[in-house]
Amino acid sequence: MDRTAVIGVGMTKIEKNKVRETFADMMWEAVNKALDDAGMTIDDIDNVVTTSSDFWDGRTISCMAVGDASGAAHKNVSCVEGDGAYGAFYGMTRSLSGSYKTTLVTGHSKGSQSVSSLITNSAFDPIYERGLGMDMITACAMQASSYMHRTKATPEQLAMVSVKNHGNALKNPLAQLPMKITVRDVLESEMIADPLHKLDCSPISDGCAAVIIAHESVAAKFKQKPVWIKGVSICADSFFFGDRDLSRARSLTEAARKAYAMAGIKDPKKEIDFVELYDAFTYQELMWLEEMGLVDDAMAGKLLEKGEFDMDGRLPVNASGGLLSGHPVIAAGLYSMAAVVRQIRGDAGGFQVKNAKTGLVHGLNGLGGQSHCVFILDKDK
Amino acid sequence: MSDPFKGIEPMVYQSKINVPYSWWAGDTASKFYITLRDEKIILGTKCETCNKVFLPPRKVCPSCFTENREWVTLADEGTVLSFTVARRRFAAIPNNKKVPVIWGLIKLDGADTAMLHYLDEIKPENVTIGMRVKAVFSEVRQGTIRDISHFKPVQ
Image (cartoon, rainbow over all chains, first blue to last red; front, side):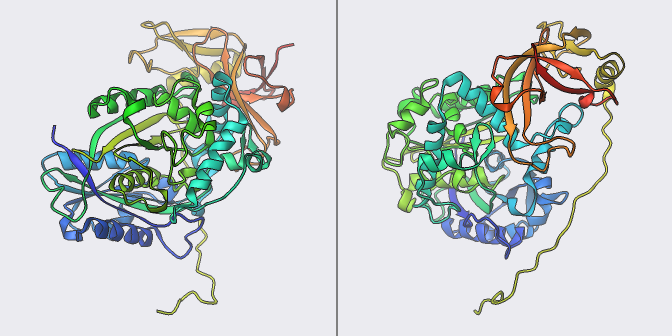
């Protein structure tokens, strides 16, 4: 199969409230940063994929509202509704299609402008579930209970994820919440929805990210050293919560397995050097690592205690600070992808990890991770 | 360039998305709700291929991709598979529910999948995964999920 590579990335700083910028203003900044990073002009981009969600954007056909600022005029522009990683998947397939060579993929969101509880409540089935008033936080709290019950992961171990990721964010100038905190700070923060404390949860954030994905025939034509997409897969589980074993993420296990196979990875525990995964809540970092087969079942908490996922540990996880340190919904997967690209190029600055040759990017969609997307990026083609 | 926002507040436009919407319940959910409302009976649908019984009931088996033709009457008792307690008044919580609100993922006897609902008549700190609970039906039933008021511990 032909290959594609990420040849440019650009992100705005993640902030609590970008009151001075509209969606299009943020997009303009991220797209220009990505073009500068790649050494391209907008004329070098032959098609555009935007990622957005109408409810989060407070408008219908939200994808069309940022096209101008993405330089999409007179180009083929389409939209993905969901996490940015899914937009990157679609962008990659366009660059592989034979019709296009260079795809600009963008993701934007402003949590600050909406009421996330009402928006995520609307993701529940309107006939059977929505009227009960659950939302993303209570849904994930229920999953956390289920995961902790099965694996015996402790509240202290969850808290350590928050301590680590907020600490990593101190090295990332784009992060919203760099913080030096302790396990005790997390456990003493307000109980939001059992078993999740306030500091077990990611913040409400504004931000925009853009990546440029090129076909191999043009990938080396521009300024950057290409970072190759070696494997990728998306898998989805049942929609209804009660159809799934909530303590597991079967679709993530499957997506990871397929992505490893495509990348020729036989032993992911040894061959993946570092990970940027979707840590909207602390328990998710531990659970996703296990479900992706990067650590043994029910062992992530213990390995975390040993420092294995620290920036200088055996398998650095969310060295950028992760989503706990800034969570622009929708754009999130592209921020993770950009962080992995920068690590592989050796451009990650203060949060650079050692031996960053093969990195894993993880995005998700749906309540409690109904669907998962796994990318394997590599320095070598 | 001088900062155009110096000494002034940036402008913010307040708005609201408010679009009425009707959900046609369809024949499967209609039968479920009519039976719940009129007879206080909880029904599931069964897949004849894999024999799984689904609650909430739906027309198609998500695993086999075949039509669920059979209806099964379920017990009004079941087991709590997971739960959470909202300590804050999240915006999505209905006005007539008091915080703390406890939601459970409840697998009724006879069903293979679990449903979301409220747990009540119990303190949050006493809820455990694996506990047995029983449905309490609402006095006034209007064909909604809240025709079940909540689930309470089995004594």
